[in-house]
Structure formats: structure tokens, C-alpha cells
Length: 278
Image (cartoon, rainbow, N blue to C red):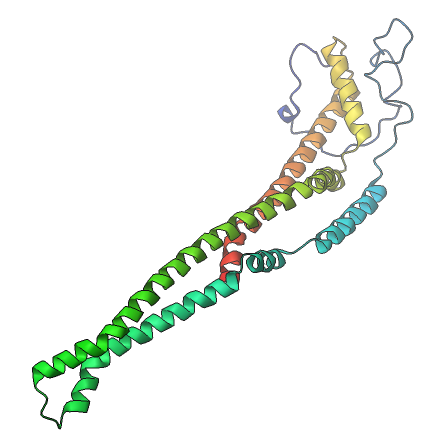
């Protein structure tokens, strides 16, 4: 007979296996060691209902398959990140802006090259003439003035175009973040359903059922209310507690795997955006 004075510790005994064989008698039956704690004749909340059935894993598998199929259909119906990127880019006229900046850069480069080549060009055209070095320098200066003015204008226009492009790309990033936040909001109901599916998977992996959970609650509640367990009930409670620990451990592992996958997906988003921008 186990005393209820000390807290129950399922890990204190390694001699019990994690198997949960059915007891010879109905664990829900009200007996000397399983009272209903009721002087009114009303059903006790600490007893397993007589209609409690084993966990329906087949129904869970069907529900999980339906959930995954519906989730895949929802994802496929949504705008993809590349599509959102292209749509917002076109709204902000980013392709045209990038082309303008590239054109200004190319024009500025051509003008700079022409200015740098001007002394050589003047020297080649005047090498067989009586033009002095001072006159050559004057020719270079005169021919360079319109090119320099044009180069200055192109430079100013290019700087303005680059500033506008930077602002538009910043707006693109802001809108992409809003798109992602909206998608996460739309996924909240699915996240809740997947959380429930995590529990189902953990139950499938460990065999932990609702009936087991109710039975363990009844046994521990009896002990907390001063009832002493029989040896059979102590053995049963130990096995149930170990099985529940296995279920909780499996559930934590499944949730952690899902969290790590979501973190990996979020970390890959900046690289994906950079690839689209390249």
C-alpha cells in the first residue's frame, strides 16, 4: 500500500515498464479505493465516464491528411513571394527607375572618357600644324567646356535618380514586410490546427490516450484526497505517469522541429529577396 503523505515520483522506480496493460477490473468503477467523493449521489468529476473509449488514431490520421490537403490548397491559392515582389516593383516603377539609373551611369562614364581623351584627340589633330602648346591647351579647354557642362548635368540627374530608386526600394521592403505579416496573420488558424495535430502525432508515437489521461487524473486525485492506493493501483499510476512523460517529451520534440523549420524559412527570406533583386 502506498502512502499519500509523500509526492508521487514516477522516476523514483526504474523497475516498472512503460507498457500500460489494462487492469483486470474496470478502472472507472467506484470501489473502496476509487470513491466518487460525492455525498449527493451526483457523478464525481474525478472518475472516468463509463463511455470513455480508446483514442481514435484512425480518425486522427484522416483529420491530419485532410488538414494537410486543405492547407496545401490554401497556400497554392495565395500570391507567392516572387509574385508579390514583381507586383509591388511594377507599382513603384522600379524596373524603369533601375534602367534610368543605369543609363545615367553609362552616359556619365562615356562623358568622363571623352574628357580624359580630349588632350590626346587635340594633339593628334594638330600634330602637323604650327599650333603652339598654349594654343593646344586652349583648344582642349574650349572643347571640354560643353562636355563638362553636360557631364555635370548628367551627374546631378543620376544622383537624383539614384536617390529616388533608393526610396522606392525601401518602400518595396516595407510593403514586402507587410505582405509577410498579413500572410502570417492568415496562417494563424492553420497554426492552431497544426498545434492540435502535433498532439495527435505525439499520441500516435507514444500510445497515450484520453482514457489514460483521465485514469491518471482519477488516481492522483484520490491520493491527494487522502485515499491510499493498492499495490496494483500504485503500479498502474507509475506506468501511466511514465507514459505521460513520454508523450510530453515527444510533443516537445515535434513542436521544436516545427519551430526550427519556421526559423530556417524566415532566415532564408533575405537571401531570396536579394536573389530577386540581383
